Every structure is written in structure tokens, then in C-alpha cells.
Image (cartoon, rainbow, N blue to C red; front, side):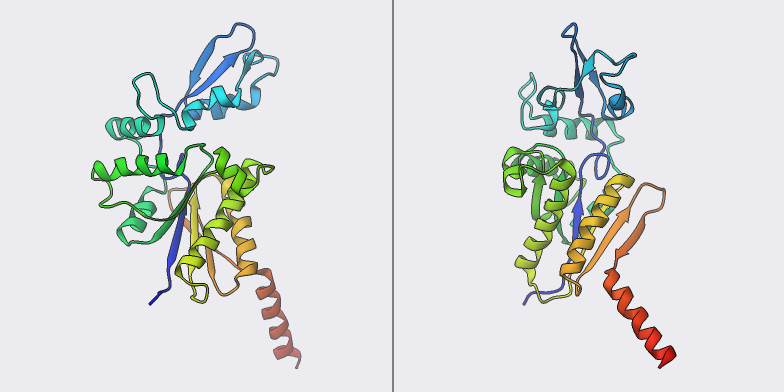
Length: 254
């Protein structure tokens, strides 16, 4: 008989895992390529093409972010699997949501992976399988869905016209629908997603609010991990608060 479930949704980069995936910039004047870490790129991306040190540099998506898509390096290793193996070997790979992710696996909670990467679901599964092989998790997660929202087939499914943020919102909604379909729409399930980036936390909150408005009997949570302590926030329907206010006014004024 179906039971109430607690669903956990995760991003990969700088959330569950810190990975050494590289970004490749192109010098538009010389054709030179410069390789940066994700943190380095985040620090200068706003200066690309602007007068100054980075005015001649660009990040053509297919070239700059090729390691964030399915593909192999010169040694024939799949980029994502290679980077997870490197992270495991070098240390410092556990992201701020790692403990929540491992907890979800240990407790057999249904999970979803929603990432801006372009990898196929099969490659993401294979990458997470490396964590099991290394003994970091005892088994593979119980997947509800896996969405690499920059993947062409995923974009076609969710909406090719959408921005990355829009695709992530659509993926969150799709994961909720899949979870309800699989485990029963009449049960009081709960759904939660964690992130350390305040902008992503806002995006998740907005997506969860849309779901809450459609499914007021379900519970939706956002877990912010951008501080030393995790903060778990429940998303409530504004209509519920309005109805509580009206009820309080009626009780007070009669």
C-alpha cells in the first residue's frame, strides 16, 4: 500500500558536490584558450568583452562549457565521471548539501537531480554510481527523475524557449508531478530542495510556491545551505494566511 513520502531534490555543482570541472575561455583576437575553475569563472564572467583585462575574452557555450556535457577527454574518460573520481582522490569534494543527500539515500527517500549541466540522465547516474563504488553511499539513490536542463532533449521536453532558470522551475514542477503519479496523489507528501546560492534559493522558493498553490494539502520546503547552519523553510500559500486572518477577524469582531 502506498505511503506518505518525503521527496528530496538536489542540484550537483557547489551543492552536493564540489567538482574540478573546467571552463574554457576563447581569446577572440588570438584564438588562445584559457582554462578556469568554476570559482574563477564566476569571479570574472561579468567582465568578459568589457574594456579592460577581459575585453578580448569570450565564453562560447559549446566550447567553454564542453566539460559540463556528455563527452570524453583525451584519455577517453567521460568528463563527469573523471571529475568525480578526481574529487574523491583529491578531497574537498563534499558540498554543503552532501549530508542531506547521504541522509536521503540512507533513509531510502525518493530523490531528483536537477542541474544546469547538459549531461544525459544516464551519465549523471553513472557519476553518482562512482560515489557508491567509493563507499561514500551504500546504494544508489531511489530516483524520481534526473534533469540536466541544458541537455537538448530535456530542453525539448520542458520548453526549448525557456531560460536556464525557467527550465529549472519546469523541472521542479515535473519532478513533483512524477512523484505524485508514482506514490499517490491523495497522500500528504512533502517535497524539499536545497541550495547554497541565494538566487537559486529564490528560484526554488518560487517554483515550490507554484506547486503549493496547486497542491495545498502537500508540504514544500526550501533548505538554504549558504551558512554554517542549514535553514529549512516551509513554503506556505498566501491564501492560507489570508483565510487565517479573516477567521481571526471574525472571531475578534464577531
